[in-house]
Length: 555
Ligand code: SF4
Image (cartoon, rainbow, N blue to C red):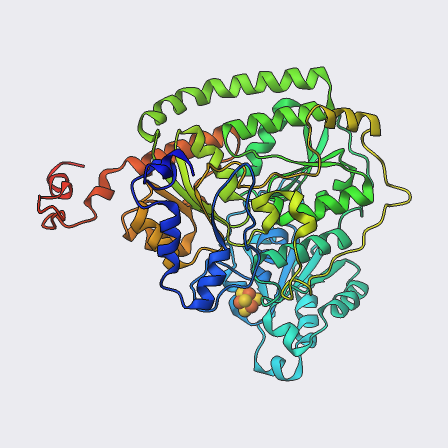
C-alpha cells in the first residue's frame, strides 16, 4: 500500500476515499454479472509489476460507453485522413454523415494538381431497395460517377453494418471497377459490428493499406536520414509541428501514416530506413508487417510533452548514430527549450499539484501524462476506450493475450520477407550493440508503468463511473471527448477534449506544448468553476459558501 493510501486518502494523497473504496463504490450499483465484468476492467496501479486488466472485451449493453465502431476505426481514423484518395462509404447515410469532417486530421495540398477530397463525404446512401435486392449495383454506379466527376488516383470503399448482413461483396466490385477504370480501387470490410470497438477497424485498415498501397512505388528517396511516422493523424496540426522539428534536425519524413499524407507518399514509404510509432494501438500491425517484409526496424516514440519529445529526438539520432545528427538534435532542443522554459515556469505557479484524470481512445491517455507532468500536475486516474492489454501492461504480455470470439474474425495477414526488396537497415551487430546499450526496438512498455502507485486504471469507463469519479475526487481537469465534455462541465469540472483539442492545437512537440500549457492553465485557473453553485446555496456546515463570496467578486 502506498504512503498516500495508508494515510486514508485518495490516489496520490488527494481528498476522498481510498482508491480501493472508490472502485467498490463505482461497482456497487451494478447487477452481479456487470459488477464482475466491470471489476476486471478496473485496478489499482502497480508500476513495478502491472496487473492484468480486462481490456478489448465486449461492451456491457446499456452502460453508456464512450466507444465507437470498427467503421470509425478504419475509415474515420486510419484511412480517412489520406487526402487524395476518394473515400466512399457504402451504407445508409448516417455513418458517412456523422464522420464528415468531425475528426480534425488537418490537410493541406502540397503539390500542384493535387486535390483534397476530405472536404467531401461520399456515400452510396443505401435505401430499402438495396437492403432487399443488394447494393453492389449501386456501389458500382457510385464509383463510376465519382471517377467521372473527380478523376482521383485511387478510390477506397468502406462497408457499414448492413453491407455484411446482406452479403454485398465489396471486394469483387472493387476488383471489377479497378479493371474498368484503370486506377487503384480497394475495399475494407469494416462493418461496425466487427470486433468490440474502433480497434478492429484499425487492424482491418492496416491490412488493407499494406496489401493495396505500401510498396507500389520503388522510387529512391534522396535524403540521409529518412523515416516514417506511424500512427500520427495530424489532429490540430500535430504532424506539421513534428515535421517542423525533424526538418530542423535534418531528418526527412517520407510518410506520416496517415495525418496530412498523400496516396503517393504511402506507396513510397517502404523506402524509409526507420519507422517510429506514435499511436501504438492503431498502427503496430503495420510496423510489424513492414519490418517482416522490407526489414525496416521500428520503435515507439512520443512527441507529446517536453520530456517525451526530447527523448524521442535523441532516440532517433542514436539510432542513426552519426555525430552531426546527434549534435544537431541537441542544438534544436536547446533552441526550442529556450522558448518553452519561461512559459512552463509561469504556468507551473498555478498548475503545480493540481489533479487530472484522462479517458481517451487508445494512446492519448498515456501520451498526455507527460504534458501534465511537465506542469507539475498529478494524474490520479486514466484509462482507454479501446486499447488492448499490451497498451496498458506492455508488449511483453502479447504471447499471453487470449483472442476471444469477438476478435477472431479479424484477418491476420501472413506476411513474408520480400525476396527482392528486403533490406536489413542495420547490421545484426549494430542492432545488437544498440540493444545492449538499453535501446528497445519493437517494444512498448505500456501506460501503467508510467502511472504512480495506486492510481486508478479504468478501461472502457462508463458514464456512471465517470460521474462517480468526479463526485469522489473532483479532479481539477478531465481529458476526454465530446460525448462526456458537457456532462463533466455541468458537474463543475473543466473537460479538455483530447480527441478534437477543443478545436485548438497543435499540442505535439515544443510549440504544441506551449499551446497546451496555456490552455490547461486557462481552463483550470478561471474562476467560473467556483460560480457553478447558486450563491444562496450553503455548505453542509451551514456557513455561507465560497461561491456566494465569489459571486459578488469581479471575475
Ligand atoms: S455502427 Fe454501423 S451503422 Fe453505426 S456508424 Fe458504425 S458502421 Fe455505421
